[in-house]
Image 1: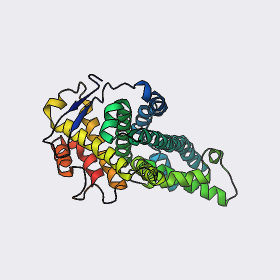
Image 2 (image 1 turned 90 degrees about the vertical axis):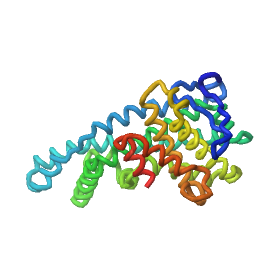
Image 3 (image 1 turned 45 degrees about the vertical axis):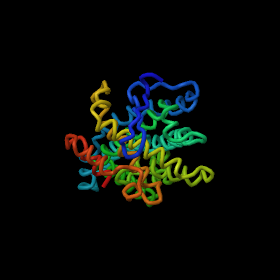
Image 4 (image 1 turned 30 degrees about the vertical axis):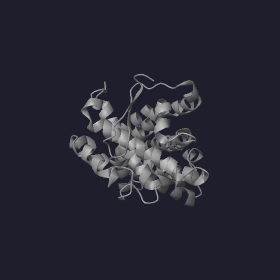
Length: 304
């Protein structure tokens, strides 16, 4: 395994031995390839999705003009033509969340399957652990962008109001063929969440636990708590942190740590903040607060 992952004996740490995951260079072994390829096909789209969301400006001006001038058909058409391609984009984001949910399930199956313990899985399947981390990094990045962009819900609300108004007038608009009423309802529930991608992953993890009754819940929660512990130690230990060759890896680690904490909190019967939790919450929050406030404010809000 060489540089990809090194097991570090840290007997003085609260939760036992810690491993160093090379989130920058881990490559799949032959045993990981099938799942890795499946998840990789989904993750290839993630960067494009974030870029599209980052450049999402909305149709605020066109919508305001249309609302202020309800009798001006030209302004109504202008607003509608501005909103429709944006709603198609929002649909792609929502459909991607469903693909991400399936990818997460595949990774959970691989990283919790018997007979190996969570620490052994991370040691044996470091490339899958890296993909799990990449999903969490994308999720928190997406939700941070969504939370700071009110245009998303404003555009979608205007779209739904227009569809409803035209339906009352027995008119069907061409855009309805792409986003029908059932799809619009599901998208509405998705975007109503403050952190829609994280909510999707939390529900998927909870569903995974409930459907796999022969798999002890501890197998899943221990996988999550181990990942949180690994990230915390890599962040707070200069010896490990200096191994990062990319400055963005620090933020990556922080996002992954917060993501697994939230998933753990949703799945574990008593949550991440209980005294019996296997996650050192004080240590994790301390690590976050030691970083520049502009880079961790969204992460601290997600934990709150």
